[in-house]
Image (cartoon, rainbow over all chains, first blue to last red; front, side, top):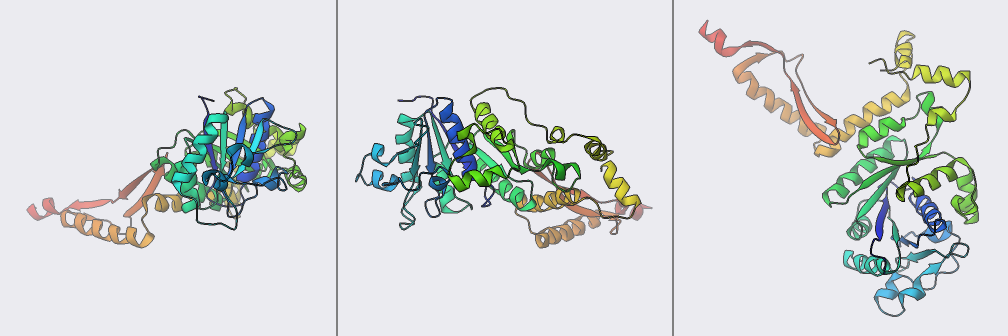
Length: 271
Length: 92
């Protein structure tokens, strides 16, 4: 029994902004800290969390079979090979759509809360039924977005819905930050996004090609202890979740040299 | 407005795209959050002006009714410069 279990929904509204990658990396990073963590793939129509964790060949059962009592929860949980503190539970089978209701989601999360200290729910994109199911089972949320107008707009919509459901706290992760583009003012700055969305920033993730390499392999960046920019960002986010006081990376400081200095000067707000 | 924005203006160049993104987002989110379409806002603006012009003469050119947001709070802001009060002119 884990009495202080944290249940956190990872959502974005828009697809392709990095929900699943964040879930996988946070799951591994927390497990590495010795915290019993489960990642629940609530996107059972288009599930991908198994693939990012390299567990795609090991899924036998899903939450669906657990709820139908055709298997035990322990049988459906897929333990990670290298990080035994991490388990994956797919909500359902892509072939069996439309079965899951908020009630089912709440029951399965309640069961997971008995065993784990962290329940991370990977939310489906959109704001329809899949999103509503996932929201019904959570207490906290992390909204992830990128510094692009469409992603920020969708994040705003999601934050509005989370607020009406009384989800608290809601924290922001800003993904795919490119310091160079921010410096030349061709990308929304971190402050722009936090001002617009009015959420506390849990962390930012720098744009990093290694993310693609790691998904190719099915080994999240946080698994290997890589020192790539995104790997550092993900593990910082995990440590902040655990209450550590880790300062945010300043994108401007990622850039050195005279050109960067001039670019920074040009960013000075006059009025 | 940043130093770059000023420089761009002086050189007649387009403003930095991040500035454009910020402005566009603020506008679209004000509408999204209030669930008001531009058409509905325009209709409301007309009706508000109708009511106000009953009492005071306003500068129709300068007048603006818009949505502004800060910290997830949306406000309907009407800026209606008054030329003169109708009541006082009638008395005079």
